[in-house]
Amino acid sequence: MRTAIDTNVISALWSSEPLASRVAATLGRAHNEGGLVICPCVHAELLAHPAASERFVDEFLAATKVVVDFTIEEPVWREAGRRFAAYADRRRGSGGGSAKRLLADFIVGAHAALRADHLLTLDGSRYRQDFPQLVLIET
Image (cartoon, rainbow, N blue to C red):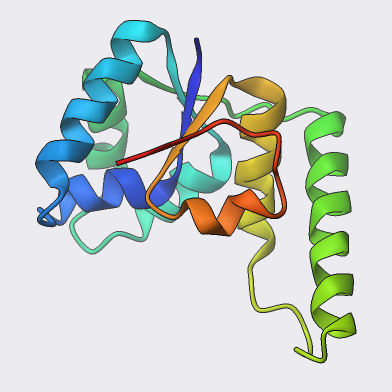
């Protein structure tokens, strides 16, 4: 079972948030059940963490055996675009105005849906409506 990881999971560890120990345990279980993977958007977002440098990020990922799937093929990009467009249409149709969520969230979701078996996230509500078939692991 391959588990994709959302940025907020790793960020919670690095920021020593109160749920960091639960996050670490969940990551450990996911690792034992199969591989851990992040998409390039997550890697890029991790570089923006206040405590991170590129070397720190890469060393952390290597030590925790999290693979960065830097090659995202066309089906992931198309799925992300379709889901983002549907979200934007719903938002405009509801009178909510322009899209508030970022395309990166949809790339993370599409990558997890097409290239992994689960998505480990701290914000399942962000993915439930747009990726209802995606199996979410929440801590």
